[in-house]
Image (cartoon, rainbow, N blue to C red):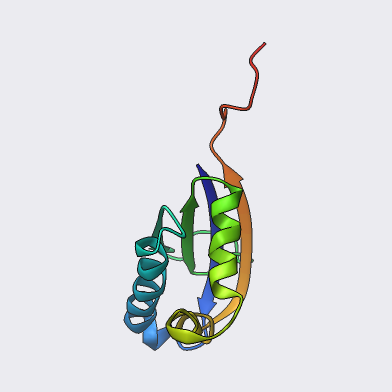
Length: 112
């Protein structure tokens, strides 16, 4: 499994529940279409964490990089329903940071 991590802050922190709802709509649609394997949303607790990482942490799960490419391909045209769902999310965030991780050790790793 590969994990696309996203950290961000909200432009308007009073719209936190709205953001969660919009993210659920957007990523839920990608999951329903088979473009991602799953996702989660977490919020920093009690202010603990590095300042350069945002208050919100999204983890998008994909089976492999081909599935991640497929998700990006679905979003790239920037049109239709998926773009409307995407726009509700990206227009609400600031201080975006991301990283890509994988399970370890993975099947491709040969042991000693």
